Amino acid sequence: MLSEKAIDDNDFNPDYYLAPMEGITGYIYRNALRDHFGQGIIKYYTPFLVVHEKRAMSSKEINDILPEHNEGLYLVPQILADDADGFLRIEKMLKEFGYKEVNLNLGCPSKTVASKGRGSGFLGRIEALDEFLYRIYENRVTDISIKTRIGVSLPDELFELLEIFNKYPVKELIIHPRVRYEYYKGQAHRDIFFRAFPKSCNPVCYNGDVLSKEDIFELGAGSGNKLKAVMIGRGMLRDPSLIRSLSGGSSYSTDELRSFLARLLRDYSEVLSGDRPVLQKMKELWSYMQYSFPDKDKQIKSLLKCRSISEYRLLEMSVL
Image (tube, rainbow, N blue to C red; front, side, top):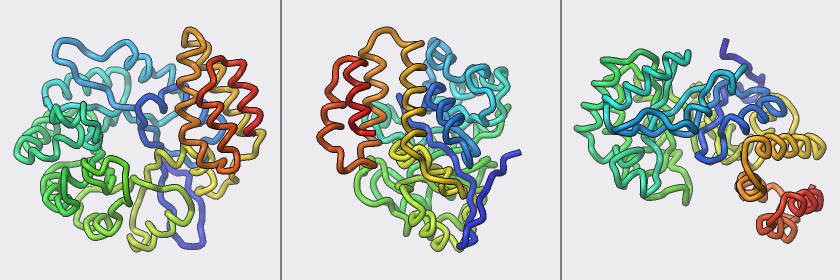
């Protein structure tokens, strides 16, 4: 049962989801997060699975979605595709693994992705997108949700996109209110989101720049407390207890954070070979967490440059 909400004084109690973050929110991170700060996280999404013409999922991708690596999680695999046959092929495989819902990525702004007409690059080909959606929804074997940006160049493109999305039984429409060319810069266009989301015939989830309870209050006020779900990515990497605190729990303690990071370091060390790939994972996480420690700038800069796990441990202690 997907329900674990807090009672808040503003009467806005959405469900909270962990956003997919390529290279970071794989099964090792997801399991550690669940065990240490899982309160309030209703759904977890995988980083995108890529459709290939001549092969199925890679061994790395399969490893990430194996049910035995995700026990106790409501996990939604995300698929990056612009080919309906390829999408349906992976969706069928995921169904065989036991998944009942998959997510279509129409949001990735990366040049290497968008230049191939995938992710947010697909949003600039309205007719092709409409045909693609018709094919996958007509032949689906699971529920299909969509994670999208609001356009390629102009925020108002969202209204035309909604006319397309409204034709189909989208399990949930997750909207990140930036256009492709904005990447993650500047302010998210919440004004456009608030104007547009009531026009959706499908359930809507908000995603983008949720870093604090004040952001949640703004989403509640702007939506008339009608928004059902909020997806958080970078905010959770900065503060892994963010969803817990938004759901009525406490913010992390120093001991909790040390334990969480020690778990990640141990688990990455068990599956990766050598210090370098393990440090890459930990440093990538600290590239976000550093914003929670503005008074430890010097120590974190050293941490991000360290070359051994033993050095990393000493520098982490100097921060925490």
